Amino acid sequence: MTSTPDPVDERLLAAHDLARAALLEVTPEASIGEPAGYTLEDGGVVSLRFANRLSGYPNWFWTVSVAVVDDAEPTVLEVELMPGDGALLAPEWVPWAERLAEYQAAQAALAEAQGDAAVDADGDLDEDDLDDEEDDDEDDLDAADFDSDGSPILHSGDVDGVDIDELDESADDLDEDDDED
Image (cartoon, rainbow, N blue to C red; front, side):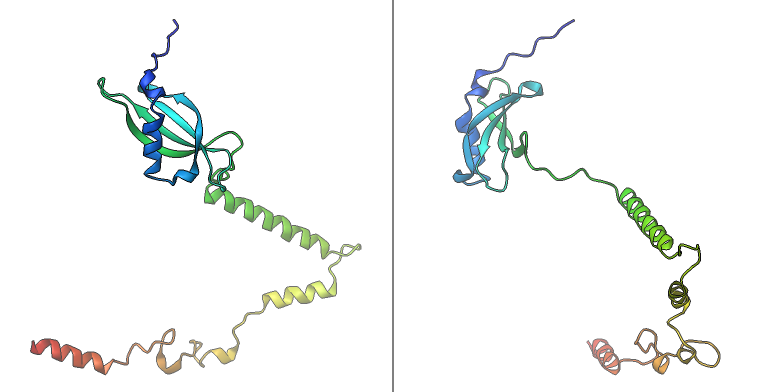
C-alpha cells in the first residue's frame, strides 16, 4: 500500500513575508538572505529556508516553520538557524568515561615506550635509570616534618592554617548586641 503525501497549502509556500517578519524579531535584516527553498514537515508544517549572511556560519540557513490551523491564516511555529550541507559543526559528543579510557591507554602506552627505552641493548637497566627510579620512591616528607610521636607538626595546633580553638572576640560582641534587641 502506498501513501500519498498531504497536499501542501499554497498559503504556506507564499508566507515568505510572514517568515521574514518573524526572523526580524530575532536577527537583524543584514543577516537574512534570499529565500532558499522549503521542507515539508509532518502535520502540514512547512519550513521555509532563507540564506544566512552571518560570516561565522557559512552554509547555514535561517529556517522558519509555518502552519495553518483550522483554516486560519498561516502562523509561525518556530524560527531557528539550521546547518546545511558542508556547514561547520561541532564534533560528536563523547562520554567522559570513553575519553578518560582513551587518555589512560595513551598514558600506559607512553609509559611502556619509556620503560622500553630504559633497557640497554644488553637487557640491563642503565645506572641513570636506576637513580631516577630511586628518586621516584622518595617521599617529600622528612622526619623533621613530624613530632617525636609521629604526628604532623602543625602551627599552634591549627589545621590547614586555621586555629579552631581560638574564638573571635568580635563575634561575642555581636551576639550580645543581638540579645539586647
